[in-house]
Length: 613
View 1 (cartoon, one colour):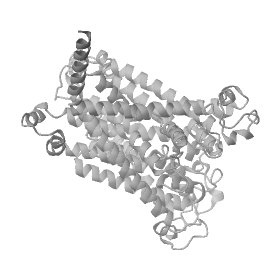
View 2: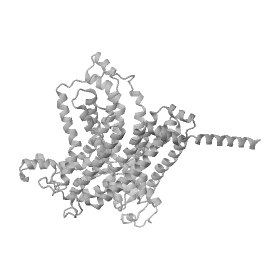
View 3: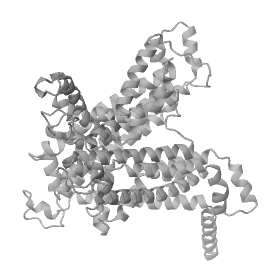
View 4: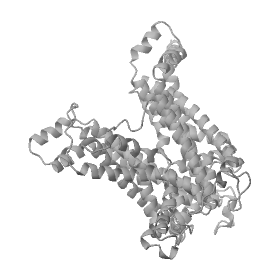
């Protein structure tokens, strides 16, 4: 009798398991949790273990001479946190990272939020143009803006010892006599290199992000609330303080936390703008450690960056989870009462256009001019040899961009890597989006959704360090496969969000009708679901492609010296060959812009449509 009962229980369990896995959505969710769980937890475990592991290069450090290579010790931690070197190697970079991220976040919210308010709530002139141009710095890689900042403001008395566009304007006014150039055109070193310019550049880069999030809330806000307050004779500032700000508070908090987290993981901006001031942050210090072979110390930096990222994730979920407590919207009114700016609408519009053009168009002009300067920063002599020379130039040691083998090789590597990452991330994102939407509300669905989104919140360089630990442990470093793996996982959140949004827009009746006539799951996907939402799915492929083409922080630790990428080649050339580096920079930006143009044409989507003017 007992055997019969046990057999019945096992049969019931087996039938339940069979029913569970007969649904494609459940299979996808289980695979997602297992695979992503492995590739997020396993590298973190290896990362933590390697913070205690002794490497060959460590033997030259004080205290490591008698410790066997490959053994484990806590000396890395005590040296980084408590030794005489800890201030220079950890606490100072940590403080710089936190301060830089804080200033960048505040600047991004103030700049992006004010512009969003002006476009959505006032009669400002030129809204459509401003809305389109304002988001341009967010499409461009942050390091291109950093490079432009240096090209524009550099002073011949500091840093590269060459003058930028601003100095050359003063030189033209002084009729090419350097002795007569006004000090007004020689900006101080602290404005060209260090904390201030790094924070400003990151703030300008992420301001469009704040503009999109905050502007979307303001645009869809119920105008009846403001109108009711106006009828009750409430002042404009009181309305903003008591009604508008509480409504956009979740977007403000979320924007602040996400920009702060992204700025913490920035590598290229402080790298380009660290300069002679010796400004260092966690990412640049970590890269320096890995360059010296001090992997244990570098992994400690990565661990702290991941801890900060997880803390930011927790705060973000806490605040966004309380969003209902801020909700005062019961319906949307189409009668928006715009604030009348009177003659200020023209003055503010002109100022915003100038600032937007400075951040959007002038960088391209700067890179083009710098790439044809005979001498870096000297706009009196131009040459095309850095573009079209078939022979190595005397000053740069490389051929013209169009004939340099390294450039062709780097472009093919970057393009191939971007294609592979986009195909994998895009396809997996569609499947995850399908499964999560079909099983929405279940615990398994929530776990899979969080795991798919987690890589977005992990600092890029810290994630690169984690997969470096995997590569070292499995023997896959250095390899193209490792780059594809980390890139696919890092960009999966873009594709999965796109897939989830696409599936949530579809009525379940569409697929149910196909199920009733016994259409197989794969045919339902290929013949029904994909054709209906093809534009959204295509963007799920193109967004990872675009991001991968411009990525530096994620790949800088993983890219082997024998396989150069466009961004790693630029990182190397920027130190030695200014003209060729600026030409390469321009090629990368133009490629990205062309890709984004294709995205818009194919999908019909535009990053600024959420706000509009």
